[in-house]
Amino acid sequence: MQNTDENDVLVSRLGNGCDLADVEEGKVYQGKVQGFATFGVFVQLNDRIKGLVHKSNIKAEHKERDSILVRVRQIRPNGNIDLEEVLIQVYQVQSIERKSTTVRISDLDDKVGRTVAIEGEVAQIKQTSGPTIFTVIDETGTQNAAAFVEAGVRAFPEVELENIVRIIGEVMMRNNQLQIEVDAITVLTGEDSDAVKLRIEKALDARSEPEEIPLLVKSEVMEKLRPEMRKVAKLIRKAVFTSQPIILRHHADADGICSAVAIEQAVVSLIRESGGDFDADYYLFKRAPSKAPFYEIEDITRDLDFSLKDHIRFGQKMPLVLLTDNGSTEEDEPSYKIASVYDIPFIVVDHHHPDATIDKYLLAHVNPYHVGGDFGITAGMLGTEVARLINPKVEPVIRHLPAVAGVGDRSEAPERALFLALVRDQYPEQACKDIALALDYEQFWLRFNDGREIIKDILNITGNTERHKKLVALLVEGANTMIEDQMSACMPHVVPRVLSNDAHLFLIDVEIHAHKFTFPPPGKTSGEVHDRLCRQNAGKPVVTIGFGPDFAVLRSRGVLMNIPRMVRELRVEIPGGGISGGGHLVVGSIKFVEGMRGVVLEALIKKIADAQVQLAVQ
Figure: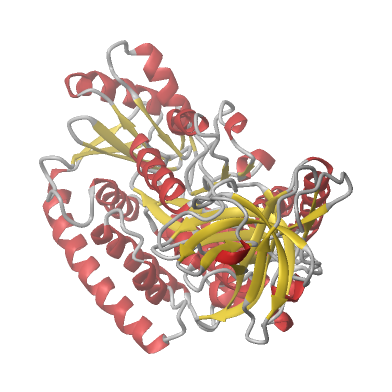
């Protein structure tokens, strides 16, 4: 064809999803100059298809990547395409896209070897040393799609996290997992995007709804908490289904560990059931202990650091943060404020006395105080029920955790006995106490590490009962040896006082009369001292204060204190005291500046003397 100016000339442009079957002899296509040879010019019709314009059929001079119009002269049996350049002044471009049927991700299993289209939201963009991996979610599941330009180079740079896209590619098996080899990605906009997004959100909302299952035990308080527990479970399930990372922070004691591990088992199993990479449960879920029973600045700093790095390096969303056995008090507020700068969502499962200022930072908050209960309903009990709502399949391996949490946190609520009765055949009360002590002892040595596999063995999550029993026995022996050594050092230095309300107060300076930097730490040392004093003073109201240079740990039996309120009052009453702290009503801790220790302790003791006392304490 020679020069022409007909307005009705159609030039085809092949989409990247097209292959050789979409090319027709005699048609004119818009292409791009790829390279030169002595015998002609190579022209790309799309990223997958190229042909050759023999030098005798070149009509103009070109350089690499120039746009060029070519007619297909012949498609050879071996797939080679002979082209000739055409010069057209005026023409219309007609885009040709591969007519790939849009399928749901859940239907890809029987599409291996076929070219398909999927529509969904981009949940992660990970650049590897080879292809770019796009993780896409639709209303039915999660799928990885690999796009390759050249090694380590970002493919489809216009595609961003949370875009609604249409991906065309071939379904392949890679490392025994389904993967789409991407031919084309189109970012959907306007009505097309809105329709897909609405479809996904509607389906995910229904899919995230937890099953209706009964509680493990009859509990009026927990029954009242059921709607909020379902809300928490739904938020976690939706995070899993949308490949949003989850960070689970918990207090580093037996109760906090039981709560967190129960939820961990539910989340990890749900991640595995939902598809994605074989190691998705490691980079989409992280459990981390918090030393204090609240979310410290140190905690949020660590979590932000990891999350921002993963967001930049691996294209992950910012995480959903779940706090259990912490998160309810004003001590958590500074960390919440920092996290709010990055729009990080929080949910809390806790049994510490809640402060009214906290809920504005939370998507959901399970706390027994909200429905007339108290700290006797432990975080381990609550976390296990939430875990069952997240994934009921994990119940057999976690149903003993509330009993361990109950004895570990010295719960006096009726639910403790109910949970113990539920598992007494396999885990009698002494076995639960031993497991709780083993958890406290092992976590002390783990410091800030989660010890995921060791903790699972202590709790017998893995099902290797023989190893579980041997490990717990060794840890309990080690813990008891160190506790007795600590008590032999501490008990002779306990200072007794009888207060005006007939409460028996005992003080112990755990800084100078206890071994440092070893097990048990000051808080647990004070608790062990308190337990011995309660046995020695049966039937009497007992308060124990273990203190150091700038802190005091309180334990009470039979004296109806409100430690969070006392802390707030002391903060106002003692200017320059630097007072902070909190905890449960009768178990908690207070921090202050070292120079004001004497003033703070005496003011604290006066408040204890003003508290109501229960008679005939058992």
